[in-house]
Amino acid sequence: MSTPPPHPLQGHRSTSSFSRSPRSSSTTGPRTGPVTTIGPDGPSNDGGGPNGTDPGRNRPGPGLRWGIGGALAASVVWAATVLTVPSLINGDSAPNVPRVVGYQVVDNLCTTARLTSFSQLYPAPTGSPYHYTTHHRALDEMYCSQYRKKVGDSQDFYTLYLQVQLHHEVDPRPEFDAQRDGLAQRHYQVSTVPGLGDAAYVGYLDDADSGNPSRHYLTQVLYARQGGMTCYTSWSASYQDGQGTAPNRDEVRTALLADTRELLRTLGGSP
Image (cartoon, rainbow, N blue to C red):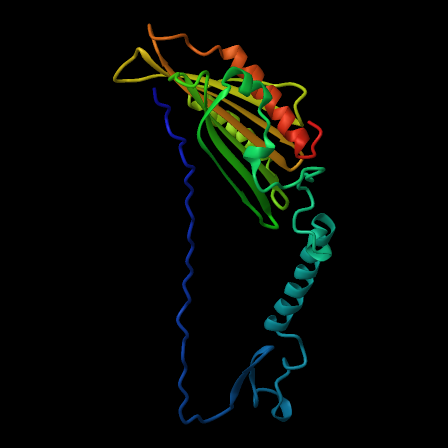
């Protein structure tokens, strides 16, 4: 039997462009009569008033009045922004990001995750587990995938994916909630998990093969969040009607919850 491969997430990058207005040029030639000059206060005529002075030159012109008004308006906007967004002056770029409390980064999530419950359901490992850990000031990520069987010569096996992310600069809550809506749109049966972190939910999908409806691809996922930590655990397996017994959904859900709690405690959290 085979299991469906994981589906990689793909994103896109938006681009923006701007245009620059062409510069205008002016030409000058021989002039006669009063000379008109253009300064910061607007146009003035050097010979338009008594004694060769412009009576309007001692009054603020429209350009100066506009500059003063713009400066005052900018000051008001800046003052309001400082009061409402203090991070602009205190250097805190993400004041509302939930903190990561207690959790530590490990180099090998596969060896850290004991998987006590799943090891009882599927005691025989198969293949080599795959893992990686990445570090960044904004995000630390740990990942593990592995395969196990019920017995050594059995074709009844499962795939397990584990992913733990520590978000240091971005609030993970909007995307965490969006994942739940995404599961529902993909026809998962989604239910809330009380008492696990700040929020958690589990999703279950029985997806029949379109070419062979007797073959079922099963997936059960668990999403958990505590502060800036998010954890994703995914179990998948397959079976065919009339050939063997379908995996017990409740047993798998119990194992997902128990092993995820155990893993998060091992990483230093208190889910």
